[in-house]
Amino acid sequence: MTSLDGYINDAEGKFDWGQISEEVHRFAEKEQANTGTTIYGRRMFETMAVWDTLAEDPSVSQAERDFAVIWQNTDKIVVSRSLPEVKTARTRLVRELSAGDIGKLKAESAKDINVAGPTLAASYLQQGLIDEISIYYIPVVVGGGTPMFQNIGATVRLKRLDERAFENGVTFVRYAVRKSG
Image (cartoon, rainbow, N blue to C red; front, side):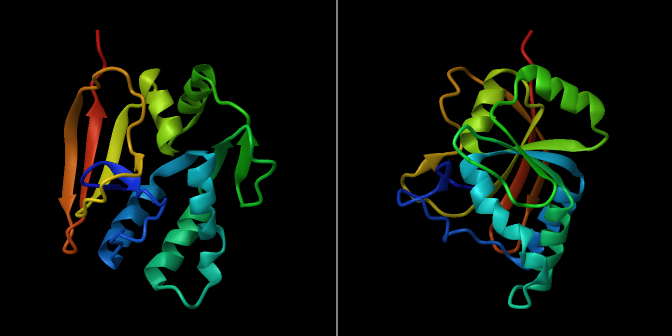
């Protein structure tokens, strides 16, 4: 998810400006159900780890509980040199995940592999390991924060594959990464 000006959080590191309606949750739930493994950077994993316990929380919506169940049932790999351990279900911690490791995951997986976290995703995008980019655009301009695309260093051409507008103003767009050569 990103602001219209391309930030995943604001200058204070907050994301309280996100607009996650039940309609958006249900769509994200279907997207997550197609995922076999999500590869996380440390900070994004720490943000998402809350889903490991929300399925049993009666104070959250049914849509949030349903998403939590799907998140719990997805394999997770956390790439971090600083995180000492992970305690969420179906999660393994690695210090690095090379292009060869990604290739092996792709060859062995019958489902999609997602990458979550701007620093990690940018690294894999630079290496040509990303096939698609999916973005939920939140209709807000925050003026600064963590950019969604960091240090890419070259033009990356995309082709729009899918687009979905939601009643609350959020727009989902999926792009194919056009391979050079």
